[in-house]
Image 1 (cartoon, helix red, strand yellow):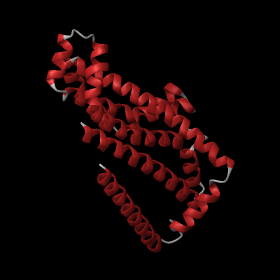
Image 2: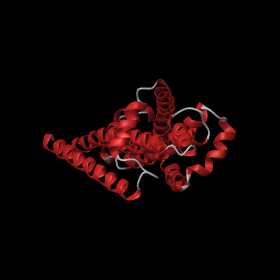
Image 3: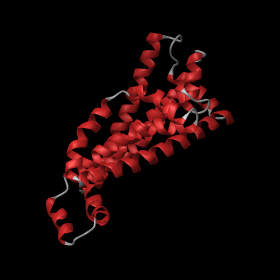
Image 4: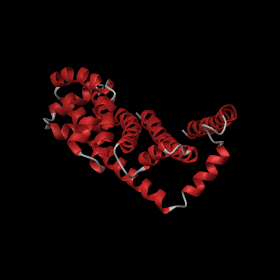
Length: 249
């Protein structure tokens, strides 16, 4: 286990070095017109992080993202377990969920705005619809893959659906469910930032869109860099936990 974690950390370090080298090469090719070097981006990001205005935008994004992720995970688990328990419903709804998942979510944004209006609620809703379907699909397939002997045991004990989920299905399906949550995390973050870019006056997405409109390359690079770092760090931690859960399974 320790060697596996160490190997993963080494791979991450190699990846980071490779990204920085590629970034520097791309900067040398493209030039100052469209990019900044890693050193220049790090320096500007450090100055940006010392301003209260920046942390206000970060707080807004994290608040919206946390609520969106909680809704996506909660609703995804509910849908997944419900469809898994009712086999006929699961067989009928799974293709519909896959089809809905394939639809570009940006096409739904006008509907989200009409339903929730501008502000926090629209960002939360737009983030949640990105993450809920992966969680639901992974949960559905995880429960389907549960060993039949466990399900038979629950039926012999005459467990009600809630107790069946709590004591048998959920513990057995945790590794795959966590994989769905990891995927849902990334998509929910994307949805939240996109929501801020198109209909918000606060948040990292708004900051990024404002920088684009003003052609502020330094700010564009800094915000993009911070979002990538946040997503990469959390995803790496989630991936390590995911591997441990599957290894233990």
